[in-house]
Length: 95
Image (cartoon, rainbow, N blue to C red; front, side):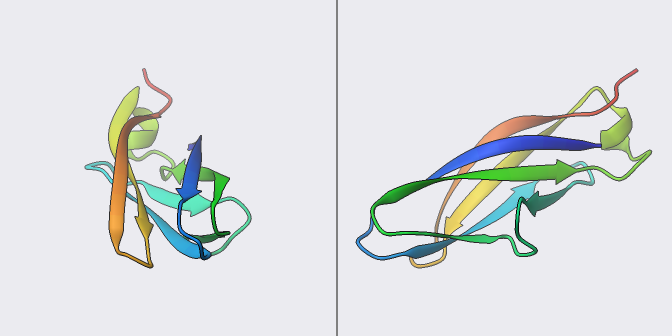
């Protein structure tokens, strides 16, 4: 099962910055970034970047078969090590 999330990253610095994406959850989930094998994106100076992110649950896992699982998506500015997060829901098949 795969859910799609669009994350807007704003770089307010006057230089390009790398941002790293991750997640935390009690459920067995993994994160992928559209168009990249890495979990990083480079955002040009003084700009906003819209990144599509996929969260995947293995087939027949608790998250895949449940109605919903809580998770937190993280974005870290690798230049300053500051992080922000947002709580969201992973939607499985449910009963």
